[in-house]
Length: 432
Image 1 (tube, one colour):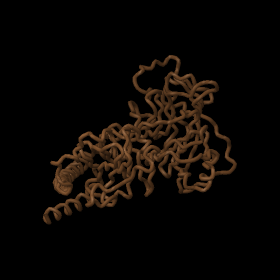
Image 2 (image 1 turned 90 degrees about the vertical axis):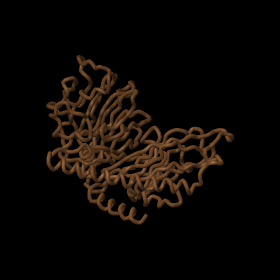
Image 3 (image 1 turned 30 degrees about the horizontal axis):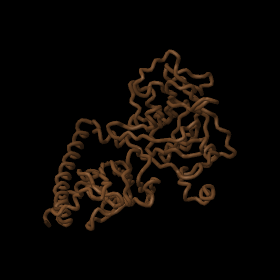
Image 4 (image 1 turned 135 degrees about the vertical axis):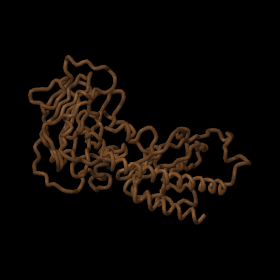
């Protein structure tokens, strides 16, 4: 046993020198429990790593509505799972979060809890996820594997699981080290980037959940800038107003009806390389329903001339998209990221956008409802400019607004503008 531990220690040390990655491990078989009981959904990190500094998200169908979210030492829970979900130990031998055990404990199970739960863990530049399937038995007379007289003792199961994981960890570490060594040589001799490096450079953004309480729009408008469309970088299929603030699809444009029309792009004439900048976009006209189709965000200025471009973060495009009945989603790299869909209610009629270049944050706000929608956390390099797309088929055009002039010139600060207002005295007073 001791030689195996020494080998693993050496492999771990070598791995630390070659890569910073982990794998989310979950059981293949479904977990079975009865209505009203308590169950643990296993999930852990391999190789073991301190998960206290990572983001841990357990969710079901919607990424933005977590069953449980652990972030910066705090826990946020979806309403239906509040006070009955928590992080727990998979076994008595587990070291908990410090050893990468992020298992989920669910109490007072209901029939509605049956189905898939996804365990998503992310760090600064790496992430992974796994799916746990929960079977909830409604009838008390239904057979359960734990009631079988032939069921093995839990200690025997743990021993078998431990040695299985031990063997898998050794083989996995060896394979990963060889893979990284091969990739390093590939870069050295061919000069090409592996797909993993491309994902790390511009892939998955982390999301900040909707802040609790009312947002101070006037404070955001202190960072307002006037935005107009750059007439040199606009799709020929768009119709633009003379003041270069209103846009919609051209009369001659024929959409195939398949997928969102990314080709109807328009870029802002203003570019940014530092600081905070805020602008608003009108998505509804008087007595008309809000637009169902639009895309709003920012893009790297150096990519404006690139032909056959893919609108992904690795190519320098970060945005929030409304695709009619297909819902809302953020920009993603298909080879790197899962498609993250969102549920925004009510549908925004006026969208506020805050670019915090230094903090690497792109935030969206429902101005009429005075609510924070979401924040994308990433890394900006080089000049970026506003990105717009009015979509196809709406009665209303997309209009860039001029915000009221701020009373005072904003003082730049290194502190992020986005705050969880639930923890502030003013917010507590407003929500009472």
